Length: 329
Image 1 (spheres, rainbow, N blue to C red):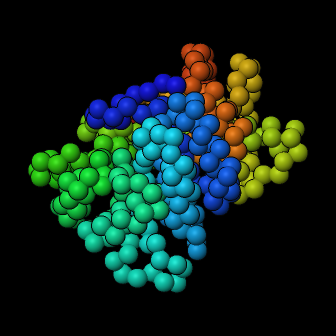
Image 2: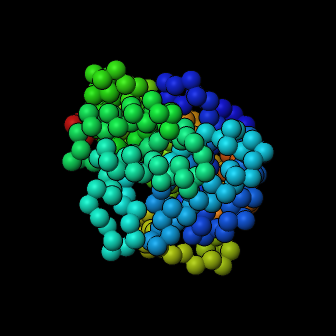
């Protein structure tokens, strides 16, 4: 396993992040535990979850599955850098009470205590804001976070789905308070969706945040979707079906799969390996439903993409470039 520092911190994390969103909704507890055991056995020490995972009436279920895994002992909790997120309302559908969501001080306090209970741990290593809260000032947010750090309930704070200017605003306010501020940003970033390169990633680099890309395969589109549907007999659905119905997108994906086939590379592994070459990226989040999917993701760490492949990928999926050049001229 390869490790790196999380942004400007001294915390060492694996270059792949185990995403747990499928634990509960698509992968049962026993299989989820087995996947976590395999990940830890391979040296993957960075686990990401969120309080709302489990969804619907089962919000919190995913954190609870991690909690029962930690409770088995064997050094599991000590070896894992645990990241979770808060923002969404945790009430049952139709029972969304005021002050039970977003980033008010009262909800931050409520949410962290509930997550600690489900996770069966006394602290969260990286506590992330799942979304921007435009109604709560950062001074209030950082006051609440500073209290949690002093209490030992969390160690670091991170953001998710923040714009570049919100990253700057958050950390400037933290600096005025003498607080550490955000140390990571979790954003959608992959070959298809590269808009983060305009301002989010430059802002993260400027302020010393580690970038943690989610949806590295863009909902499966970068995992060889055309080959799987034409040769494997699978039927595309959702985002994949919509994309393949568009001639331009289908041609782009076909060129992508042809390029990697020419070099003997598996599309999903190559897409992850590409992210590992990008400036500022700590490690992409992989969300395996099965042990086989975890094994495939781990193989991406061993890939050294040839220059011809990197050039070809840029030609097929050109990035927007940094701002203001991306939109000014």
